[in-house]
Length: 188
Image (cartoon, rainbow, N blue to C red):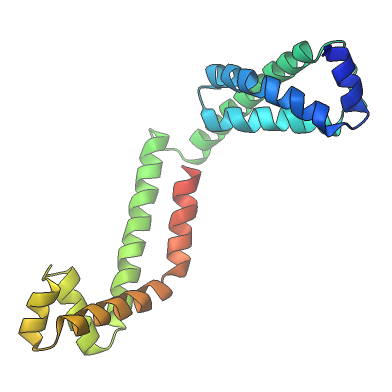
């Protein structure tokens, strides 16, 4: 189908025609964006945004061929993203005056790990004495369930259940720090 006919259908709100353009050009645009940005996630976002923009502004866009419009728009979006990335890097370097931003991330990661260790220790200390002893024998002394059961003269099933209950108690008190960890690692 001729691009101009296809675009006329898109301007009239024909989602099927738009989907046809999307399926035809998405892989090419994505590949092109990855080569320019060297970042697959940014490339996906930019191409998706381009198609969303094209659909939402279909009645305002005037062009004879779809392909040139998409490629020029993609190039402009990639240039804008590159400029934003440079500004962001400058801001980060000024805001976090360390010799290397990776060094800052390493320090931040260390702090989060120490906070996590402290929260785990608080959780262990809050356990009832017998549960705490069994948990420490398992996790700190690295004893098997069988070895713990023999030392305490209980069943291995009892040891297993006690450790599972201890883990549930410790995890329930760590929701905030786990969420912080998750956000940190998703942003890096």
